[in-house]
Length: 570
Image (cartoon, rainbow, N blue to C red; front, side):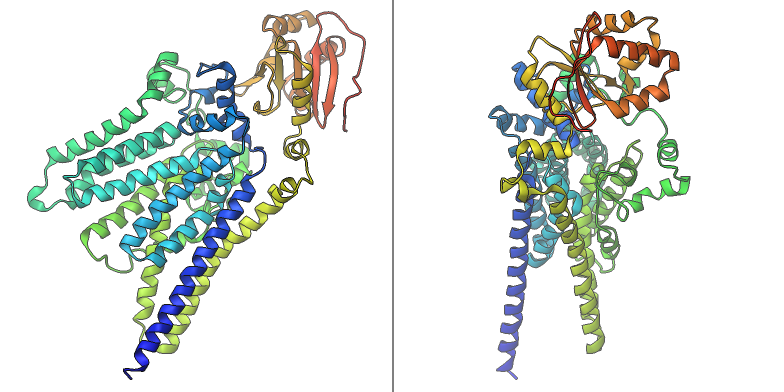
């Protein structure tokens, strides 16, 4: 009996070691897969309209400057400032790696926290689950900023927990506030963090303090310290916007600061938007906070432009099935659950909800998922009947496997979609790769090569994707209004249209023809369409076309019809 016991322990340790090694191998393989997927030229919309485009404009200008026609340029840009360094050397893939780095930093925080409250194995499972979530993988291969927001938000929340263990160590509270300010300075969604965590600090202080040390004055004071630390960290962006527009949070809260509110938070009621755009009933819209865990689809705004994992909702339900070891752990679990719930609800009321907008709620949900899985294991171990206990453990292993396999299948599908190996092997050129995803690219390249810096191009229905266009240009659509279309509506003669174009310095046009024709048919009378067609035929000299995109040169006098023999596809 005594002799066999050590052997059993050795076997148990050996099995556990193999399991941990397997998790580490999966973790390394996941990182390698993400790096491969990220090692292609940027083609994601927000990278080309904002996160890489604005920094490139700053570099071309020689510094930060106001760009009134691009609302994105007023957003806080902590991560974009980091992207400027590799962009200055002509590398636009390294920004993706920088963005992915914040996912790894979040994983480090997550690993340390779960290891302390549970164990190393649980921490590894939590990190692997988090890093392989579809939305995290998708963000990790883009030059967006949401992973920075998730990191700073998670760091702020977990540092508050650290401070609560000894409230005399105010440096942790100050650091938590600074991280929250960095979250706001990374993306305006961080304002939700600022609101929630500023309210949480005094409440958590009161709940975690011994009854004889509770003080409303101290609770308010600590909440103020946190808020001021966050505000000070965010202040450079608020000062910039105040100088430019008079609104420190421009383009948000225009009604408060007396500026135009062009944000996605303003305008039409959220329920009406879903009804008119996607024909949803009120109850379908109301269930979105649950639907996002099951119905997400990449690149489909109707289904929230991203994917989560159903187990991210299911497993946290078991986080409270076993009593916490102490009061602080119980409060921490409650805080994680309340923070996640409130963050999702507040993000839900944005007019155009994307799954990445609830990013800061993901880490708390992952922690609660690991709590939930661990609690079910604890309950299973208490089952007296061996066969039943083995059956339950088998079910748990299958659940854990299903949760990870869901993520693995998604990553596998990404390889088919992103096609990194054909690009990295040299089978597909950079031009062909980008053109496959962004058919305006060949037209942009032609314009870059044949137009001078003295020209100015008006881009119509190009999705405001300007990163690859190096010549002076402007976009036609601003605040969902077509400047060119409105000009045509007001014009009485072809000269009126030409005068507008010339007064604004436009020498060329890039137009996506199919969408432009649809827009004309739906928004202009026959008379106005005929008027524009006269201008197009007589004064727009066709230079180059690819797919549905065409480049035209604008002439003030009628020109003979000429077509440059550039590459043209139907």
